[in-house]
Each structure stands twice: as structure tokens, then as C-alpha cells.
Amino acid sequence: MKPNDSGKGLDTILRAKLLAEAASAAEQAYAPYSGFRVGAAVLGGRGAIYRGANVENASLGLGTCAERVALASAYAAGERDIIAVAVACVDAPQGAPLEQRMPCGACRQWIQELAPQAAIIVPGAERSFTLQELMPLAFSLDSGHRNGRGGLG
Image (cartoon, rainbow, N blue to C red; front, top):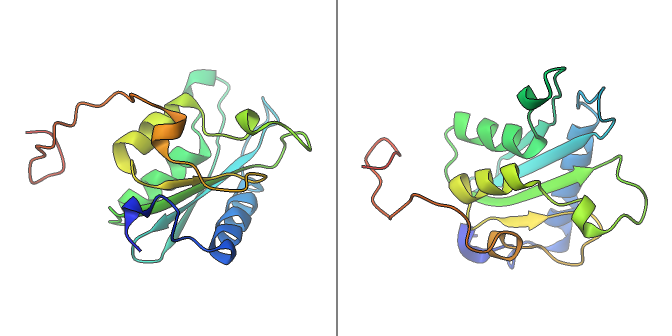
């Protein structure tokens, strides 16, 4: 499966597995201030799944989201081909609208930078989403000219 499949190649079983991994990761979240535990599971092109959970801090701006933890874990492991990002907000009210279960703006920007072609999967949605759907005209400095170290050059 190629990353630009935008989830079209993800079968129902794989989507369910990623959502289950995300929900399991959410159980490890540290969210004493918001009480809103979130987990994420990132599927890499080599088939590995990288998990993350939100971690809050008393200095509220220093907390980090599950999606960013999972993406950073994937990159730290050398993964550069991100196929999908599944997000589970286990404390979202039952029947909450999709808007309350989607990645926040900061996480969408991370996805733009590190996994722009990834399918975005949330519980309760009948399909996956593309970043273009969630963040049209996303900010980017990428002109298609990256140097050998992964930076702009």
C-alpha cells in the first residue's frame, strides 16, 4: 500500500485494528487537567504501528497530543512512509459529533508536515479522511526541494 492511497486501501479489519490500538494507547494518557484521554496509532509503510497518548502538564502549553507523540515515535524509529493516523478520544461523550473526535489544529499541522497523504481515521466515521478535507490550504514551506537531511535546502 502506498501512502497516497489516503486510506482507500485500508480494509475494515485494518481500520478496526488501528482504532483499537489508538483506544488502548488512550488508556495510558496523562490527562489530569482536562480529563480527556486521547490515543493515536500511526501505521507506517513497513507495517509497524506506532502508538501515542496525550500527556498534559500543569503549564498547559507544554502538554502534547497523542497524534504528535505517535508521529514522533514513528519518525524516531526511522519511518518516513506514513499510511494512516487513527485517533481515539475515549472520553468523548457517546454520540459526540465528529468535530469532537478529530485531530486538533496543531496535530493537523504535524500531519501536514510528516504525513500529508495519510488516511485519518476516527471512531464513528464510516470512512477515513484526507488532510486536504480537514485542513484545506494548509500552511507549508515545502517547495519540493528538501536537502539530504530532510530539511529545506
